[in-house]
Length: 219
Length: 352
Image: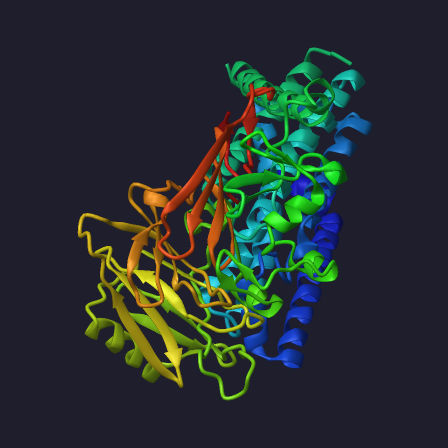
C-alpha cells in the first residue's frame, strides 16, 4: 500500500518539498539580509516590541495549500479511475487500508513540514535568542497544523461520492480551517494548541464516513 | 463501530461550528440593525473642575451636556474645560491667565496635561510575551533616548543581559544588575514588571518590578550603572499585583499600581504609594482605563463588563472629587462560542 501511494505521489511530493523549502529559504534570505543590512540589534528590537509574525508571515497559507494539493494528487485518481473500488475489493480490512493511505500522506507531510522547521531552527538559532526563534516557530505551528487538517478534510471531501454532500463538507472544511487563522499575534495559539492537535487527530476518522458511503454506493 | 465514532465526531464538529458562526453572524450584522440605539458606550466625557460636573460631547456642534442635567453651549464647554480646549481658547483669545487661582499659560498646560490609556490586552497575563525586555539608558550622552544594544531576561537566579548583535550573554553587566537587585533585597524569580522601551518618549524611568515576595522595586540604568530603589508600602497588608510605568511629561508620577483587591494606587515621584480616589477599583486583566488629567484634576474612565465608570480625582492628593457610573443597557448580543476576545490576545474556546 505504501509503495502504491509512493508511486502515485512521488513527483507531487518532490514538488511540494521544493516549494515549501523554497519559500522557507526565501523567508530566511530576507531575515539574513535584514540582519546584514541593519544589524542584529535592530531585528531583535523589532521582534521584541512588535506584535507581528516577522519573517514567517508568507508561510501562512503554504502548509494548507500543500495539504490540499497532496490530498488531490493522492485521492483524485482513486475516484476518477475507480481505483478505490478495486482497493476495497482486496481481502484486507478497509479501515486498515484507509489508515495506511492517510498515514502515508500524513508521514509525507510530516517529513516535509519537519524539514521546513529544521531549516528555520538551524538558521535562526545562531542569530536569535531561544525566546525569539521560539516565538517564530510557535507562530507558524497553527499554520502547519492547518496543513495536516487540510489534507485530512480534503481527503474526506474527495472520497465522498455525492456532490451535494461534497459541497456541505467543503463548507465544514472552510469553517474548520478558519479556526487556524483567527490571529497572527505571535504565540496567541499556545493555550489552544493541544485542542488543535486533538482536532487534527479526530479528522483522521472523517474520510471513513466518505468511504463507508462509497461502499454503500451513495453518489 | 468506527463509522459511529466518525459520525459522532462530525456531529460535534457541526454543532461547534453552528454555535460559533450563527451568533457571530447575528452579533456582527443583525444587532446593529435591530438594536442600533442600545449599543455603544458613553460619549467623550471629561470632568470640569470649574463647573464641578462631567461634561459630555453629546450634541455635536449644538452644545454639550453635563451629567448633572445642565446643558452648555460649545463656547461655555470650551471655557469650562480650558485644559482640554486650550488651542481653541488661545485662538479665540479667551484663555484666562489664572484658573482657580493658578497661573496658566499654553506651554504650562501642555507640560502638565497627562494622557494615559491602559487596555486589558496590554496586561502581561492577557497576551503572549517572549520574556525579553529592553532597558534604555536613562541619562544618554545626547539629548534623545537611544535604542540599547542588549536585551534582558529574568531567570530564577538573576537578570541576564544578552548582546543583540552577537547573540551572547553579557556576564559583567548581568552580574552588576543582579548584585544591585540582590543588595536591595530583591527575591527572584520576578512576579511582574512593566516598562516602556519606546525611544520617542521624553525621558526614561526604566522598569517597575514586583519580586517573588511581592515587594515593589524601581530599576533603571543611569550612566551605564544600575539604579535600584525599593518602594516601601506604608500599609503592609497591601499586596502589589500589577505595576505600570507612566512617564508623564510633567513627571508628576513614577507610575501606577494595583493590589490583589484591584485597588488603584499612584506611585509619587518620592516613591510614596497613595490610593487613588479613596479606593477606585481597576482590574487590569478585565478592564480598560483611560486617564486624562491636568495640573488640577484627573478624569479616570474605567470600562468594565457591566458599566463605564467615571471618576474625577484631585491631581494634588488623588482624593475623589466626583464620580459617575453609567451601566450598559440590556445586552442585545447572542451568547455563543468565541475563540478571541477584546480583553486578551489569546486564541482559545470560550462560551459567552
